[in-house]
Length: 372
Image (cartoon, rainbow, N blue to C red; front, top):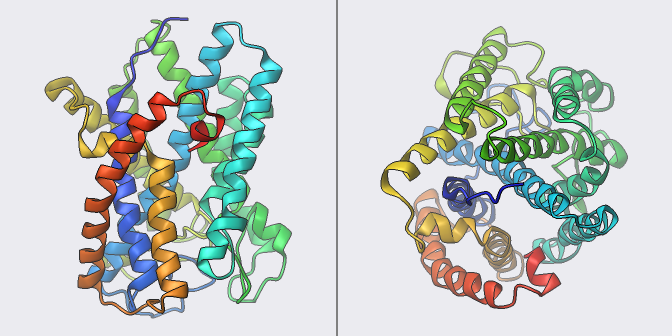
């Protein structure tokens, strides 16, 4: 298999959403007016959605899908390259299992400690999805796409059987797989199956990139992403316009832009999935075009953040949650101060991530550093 040049736009995309993620996590920790109604379980009909607060929350919806999708892309490229070089398949499986378990355990351990309660969120979804890829990586891309789009199209039927919004569902098992759960002691917001779908789609995209590099497909990444992005955004618009199935009970109440974009993230509705993956596809395509035109700055902000995304995530999340939980700063700020805190954190994170990237390269043989 030919050696593939690293696509900087993928790192840029990851770095872009990491910046937005810092804003969202700062808002979750400190903003007294933080909006968290992106679920039928938490939204009451008629609740106001102030424009600035809503937009601040809404733009963060892009983060988790991109994070999970590109995790699948990176994993596919890594695994397929190893297989082409003759690496032992069982050793590859073992590495995926350990890496997935390590990432998944960060949520119920270190993240939960700093948050002050048991928290099952995006790291659980990424880690367990990776573990599942030990099995799913053996399927063809066609089979994986059929599985993924079957869930996007019909998963809502299954979710609706075990998740009655605002009826205090008490099934933790259902929440771990398809729905949500919230109590003073435990919160589960990232069920496995809908997020596994996003990793599967990312895996298929990773395979595609390798095939394109080998000349096995004529459709270029920019063209493909633009087509997929357009299709996804049209599908989102149709679902949201019809205002019925595909919204997971979080329906549009009027024609305001907030209501059109007020889609269910917890758990992910088809409308949410199509909207976010559509936006991701279009933005990534634009970034690829920009990369061709202007080239790559090796120490650019987006590149550095994108290449150190896991340690970036842990550092800022633990600082925000730790100071909010144990420093008495939970919801002490307004939206303007939240933006200022976000900017300050990004300024501090850049030199750290710049140093960490070099440190990681120098210690490339470290198993634990590979996980971070």
